[in-house]
Amino acid sequence: MNQFKTFLLMAVLTVIFVMLGNLFGGKSGMIVAFLIALVMNMFSYWFSDKIVLKMYGAKEVSPEEAPSLHKMVEILAQRANIPKPKVYIIDTQMPNAFATGRNPSHSAVAVTTGIMNLLTEDELFGVLAHEVSHIKHRDILVSTIAATMAGAIAMIADWMKWGAIFGVGGDDEDSGANFIFILIFSIIASIAAFLIQMAISRAREYMADESGAKLTGNPLYLANALKKLAYGVQVAPPEKINPATAHMFIVNPLSGGHSILNLFSTHPPIEERIRRLEQMAI
Image (cartoon, rainbow, N blue to C red; front, side, top):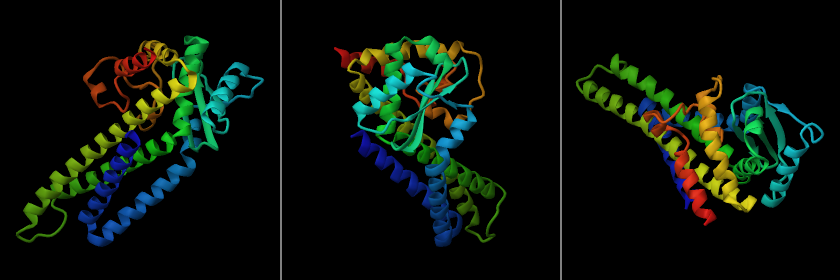
């Protein structure tokens, strides 16, 4: 059901993007918008993993440098029936982790030194299972494309909004009504794209929690890890986090506590994630 929901939401994102292109420049604008979306998605497909790993200074480690970490990833990859991902460590006190890569054959798991110091081995095993599940189900690619599409829609909608405000376009008697329509549609499109991206990300997080719990055989590994991480990301020293990549982490590094902004997070409420995992353990 979640897979179908994701496909449907991605289709809606594409429709919004093409409609904006059509409104902005007719059939030619629609074709240009489609080509832009295609190029952006291809770029995301091939290079997003390298970009995000470099962005956070991730260092690839060998089995000799991190034997326990490699062993856990190897076990989980075998259980998930995927090639073993590369293993990276990020030197930061922020307790977090993420997976990246365009497909299971070109994937990586990155953990911070903070999460390795905070969690027990079982809890870390649960976190790694969550990330391996993301790789197995190609969630990284889906989330990256959704983020790229939403960003592009917001950009085009912003152009249209300011164009409408400053009256860029025709000066015929219908232009006023057209500009009002463009202004309203551009605002709605931008908000809708953000909400769809958020819904896709949340659905994939729930799926990875459930799938990861099945890989470990004990949902409480991840549930207990999330309890620690919910507090850990709030008290850790501030880090420079690119909001465009926040959805990749196992817990939102920009959460900053229980504020109303968390309602618009790309991550599901952590309390609900814990509740679902604990329910699986019963």
